[in-house]
Amino acid sequence: MTETILANALLVLPGETLHGQIRLMDGKITDISPGAAVPAGAVDCAGDLVMPGLIELHTDNLERHIEPRPKVNWPHAAAIIAHDAELASVGITTVFDALRVGSVVSNAKANYGEYARALADEILGLRATGALRISHFLHLRAEVCSETLIDELDKFGPSDRIGIVSLMDHTPGERQFRDISQLQKYVCGKHGISPDEFEDHIAAQKALTARLGTAHEAAAVAAARRYGAVLASHDDTEAGHVARSAEHGAHFAEFPTTVEAARACHVHGIKVMMGAPNLIRGGSHSGNVAAQALAEADLLDIVSSDYVPSSLLSAALMLGDIWGDLARGVATVTAAPANAAGLMDRGHVTIGARADIIRVTRINGAGAVRGVWVQGNRVA
Image 1 (spheres, helix red, strand yellow):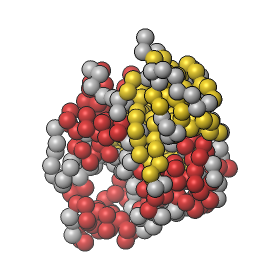
Image 2: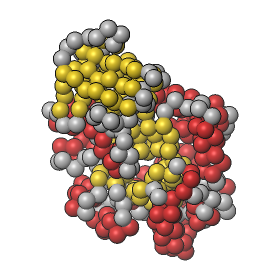
Image 3: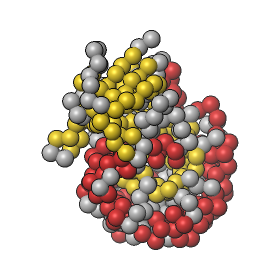
């Protein structure tokens, strides 16, 4: 029986903060008490913040470890372990690793080969051996504009820890890629294709969606139900997109691109998730709506680190400052994502909750992680 007491801390509780201590035992929070006392054997947090471990619903960070430079394929086990350790070091205790399903195999220039099933097996295998520090689930990003989506979805089942399926539509001229000039910069820069090849790519992708888009969308929705996963939308741009997401039963919307779409999400009871890099940088790198604008309009519910893991904590503290409510800011990266993903055992400092806890100190406004516990065991 292992017991840890974190004392003399500013505890971030649901809806409030409290100067006090918490006790962790047998993987759960067993006591919360006010006061500045430091019992014998306790960790003196010296006034640092103690809050729930951060919960990441959508991150591409593993891709960076697998391909640290273009065309460099790093050994996957080493990449997964490094990714896991990086997340732990910045206070993330639960992650939904985002894996694309749906490939384009007839056009080598598109570079959309299948990989998700094999990589999922490697993640799950390392988890089974106890090699990973934090809790890993899978997030399947279902690409509607593809050739192989249905076949790839059929390779997964309810035993694969799939917590989220998101509906992605990267058809040129739609959603995130509504501005074709922005798409051209992205595709030509990433894949090194010529303007003529880009035009051929546009035509081929539009033809794919016209031929298979409706069937692929229906298959992804059905797969989410089959896996027991939460459904999310992606890059909603207008009210019509949101209405369709609501019909499918989406729980949250990843990165809506306009105020109109974010407002429509709230009308339909769909939670809005935005990227922490957008918030911290002061705007979207692709010209979409700024996360801060949605926060100030009370249209922001969940934050994702997207491609910068350390941004998640910084964004929570920044939102606490914007709203004048630290507990509310922290909830966007703890309780809100936990609830959206159906993980009711974590994301909050309450008695009986899973003991995923982080200790944080603020230095010149920024957050520095000083300790991370997963189910009561220190992992960073």
